Image (cartoon, rainbow, N blue to C red):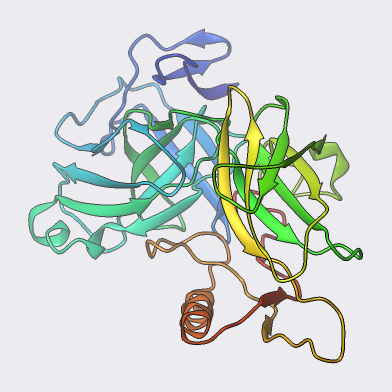
Length: 340
């Protein structure tokens, strides 16, 4: 059995064959005499990692490197610059991807990627830099420099780990109406359970109300089948939900959600007017949005038209007094790829 493992503490990669470790880890993989090659088997762009080993001595390529300008990120959405250099005979199908650590054959790879020739110096000098918007996936990440396109890719270099300072950062907060006047539901996600709660009030620093949240999660066994149960599965963390109550009509409320010791997120909303003949509101409605990364990177089933939709929605909201946005469904088309 061949497997690629990374140490949970230092993020270093090691190759093992039949349970024994090959002595020297080869971070950079060379040409035809390299003993170890890393092949991503691509179905669409969701991939598994398969390692092949031959009997020749491993040869590293120390001139090829890839590194991010930050190893610790403060919050989800932070941007990093990734640089690479030392690429021999650079090609237009070279690309850089984001992978989840530990990097092994049971994980999806890459989470997203960009072609190296997006940087103007790649083809002429074998080096370049690209900007990335990073989402807090609640685990260590790394960048890989990959050669030979997406059909038969070969990982040529791996960056040092990149991680977020708080894996329990409250994320993916969603507000939704209930069937009761004077209520608003909030949902968010953290890695661990903690003591989830939400507080709210009519001023930002004086919340008169608070309530605890219920928590749930799911496992691969709860899903229908591959790829959601295999290469597409990622630990979803814990999903918290709570209902803010005793809300007055046409009133602006400020709220905080999270858990002591894990951090809190903050936001505000304005409640609907009281029902009646004299009440009115303007709203935007849309559906079938799809998804695309704001940094222009590719991922499984990227739909870059969705960026046009969200840009136009922002323009509409900024230009008029809308009270509500209704999304009818199909926020993304993950189809078994949980990293989306």
